[in-house]
Image (cartoon, rainbow over all chains, first blue to last red; front, side):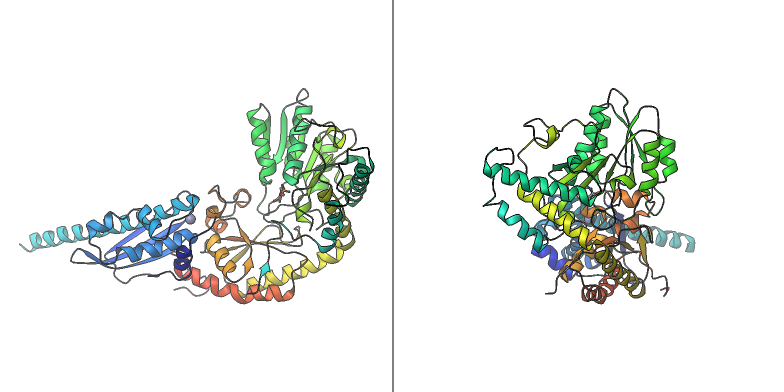
Length: 137
Length: 391
Ligand SMILES: Cc1ncc(COP(=O)(O)O)c(C=O)c1O
Ligand SMILES: [Zn+2]
């Protein structure tokens, strides 16, 4: 098993590492196959993802794909971000060894789960506002 | 870059004196040991001298040594050889849950062929209890196979006690001694074993050669058919240079083992105590004392083993890990699982296995770089919370 130079570069210097204060969405996923775990945070403004950060417990592929996916989503609107596949992330890293492809699924899932969380929260926020308005009235 | 090789349980570099002994057998003394002429007889002589050396090293007789292509073949030959030779007597085999795959997968294969296998549990140190062996014995048990030293954690099994039970109950006993030979004393009589596997490349010999000890009078069926080599127990023209290398490696191990073991133990203690001092939340996997003098398996809470391994590799340090992501099968180490190690800690396990070329400087170099690596990975980790500084 050999990683591409790009994978190793992201592994050595992962981008966007760490927690985020007041994220708009949090994705927390675990890979049941190998035990890798990833947490991804997004900040959304006007329907666009303006910032993304991550924390990952995982192998080289998991850390590199986490790093890459946070780079890829920045500046994308929600619709575009939802279309980012694990394959696209792997390709952006010049590929992953076949046995490591499952690790890239984690990055895709963490992103989807963060967006879902954002949609739910923003949705819930709206209903809350409405209820509050109702209460007031 | 400084390179520190701490993966000697995976394989070892060939000892210069072993290499020197082998070289004539590639070119000048190249004969086929089965040939009657001068060339063949020279090769045959070297083959038999090596057989004596290997036998002497483990307290056996030369006629009880079968040369093979390595530990994997020796394990296969021992287990399948006994199973098929004794299938009329019984179909039950006893082994442990922490064997090398060269034993476990043979047992799984035999289960498909109508044999029944009991996989004995181990305690948290990785030890099989002799009582559990005794309890597992059935009237149709034909073989007990329990490894001497575990390759991942180094734990030594109570092999004498298990051997006594096997002998008293007249059941054939095989041990995979691939990791213990050359590191701790191995003697087929004091162990009461009928079969014992060893491998050359773990003891500074060449790859692709090993031996199986088969006690006189023990019947085994060969794995494959061919010529009458190795007393019909292993067909195929003998790997004379390899066998000569193995013989020399055994000879050197016999000469140096005591001194070597003392040196390795001191280095390993230095590494273990250094890690415990410099890195928070590290845990030993394996028996604290009943262990190979060169094997240290530790878990680093909150970090995954492969990422740790890759970072160490970037600093020139070679180790191995029990992480699922590195295993190729995506399963966490079956050894650590059987020992009841928490899955996340198993994911974060590293095996340091020392060898004759390691020095104190090597150990100090590892200690100098590892704590920063662990800190960095823990900072990336979603669930590592330092135990000493709650934050
Ligand atoms: C305990 C044990 N048994 C068997 C083997 C297989 O030996 P070989 O590599 O010579 O086939 C190994 C090697 O990793 C081992 O550690
Ligand atoms: Zn992984």
